[in-house]
Image (cartoon, rainbow, N blue to C red; front, side, top):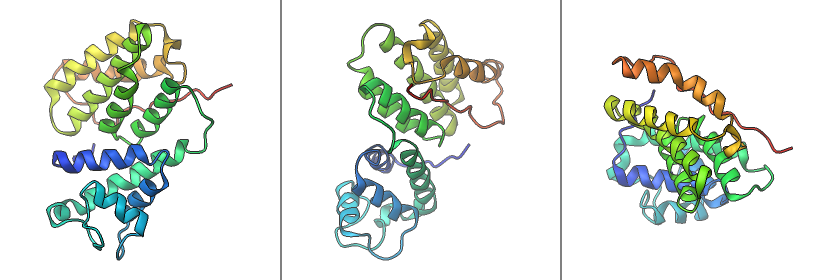
Length: 212
């Protein structure tokens, strides 16, 4: 799994752009420039990048403080663009359904911090089994985020708690997601981490049930 090691301000700025790109063309353009910078960014992209403190207004490169992360930024932006392209043309859902579809697109690009951010926004107002299921999914995503950054202990605890929480509610609670498939696919990770090992395979994908 990649280990970007972004400082918090950079991580948060990239996450803000990644989430905005699902509905905002200026954020998409900003990510496009970060993925392949060449000269000054277009005006709308430049304004968006300046607003999250990645470039100076009118600048033609990322700020010097971020320059050492240029390759990782480009990779991150490329994956965020692919995630946004997966759902931009889909029909509108209710807030939890839409958040789950966005989360799946981000998850499958291994953007686990962004998964946490988009799910937490709907978890805050969810109730009952939906809230329980969302919290379990968030915990699993954060477990993989911890693994990216070498925190196996935190990953082990959150993966076990998240799987137990998600398994405690009926699978259709998050109707857009293949919850049984995720629980099955994460079981080997749970066992390996409990035994002090880390699987070498990529994290499992999160599959979506399309609306019928």
